[in-house]
Length: 181
Image (cartoon, rainbow, N blue to C red):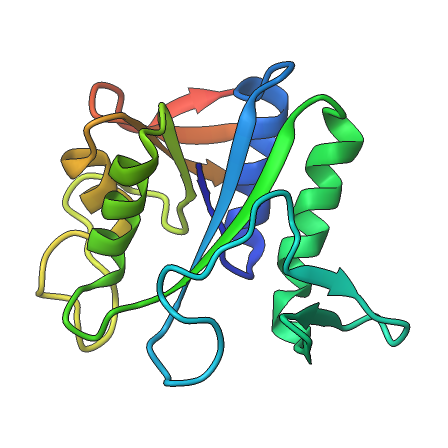
């Protein structure tokens, strides 16, 4: 399962996974957790094999009959997977966040429910241990990748692409592991 959000951290994590984690005939779940807004897809709404997301002639994504450009990143990620590994089955799952539960808990619940072997998530910052999110929530504890790594029952890999070359990986047993790729 790859935690899919629009942004370069997620694309870096996908690039690493395509090179080092996905193998022939794997099933890959691109999981996108939406903020609770009252609009969009409802919790539990999902697709198998990309059924709910189609490109329109304008290039926007069509979700359950609605045109919505914010889902284009999911279509791009799926296309990247299929181009690199044609035998990998890619499913896009979109869930709306429950207002009573945080994003990390939603991701862990989906991973447990689907019995996934690995969670892959993009990571922004360069230091893993002791760092916190910036801004108003800086003192509330670990960031999302760090929390998932520590709390997941399966292997969780946080991937950060370095500008010079390679990746920095974090898991429960390896912190700031440099992989030159």
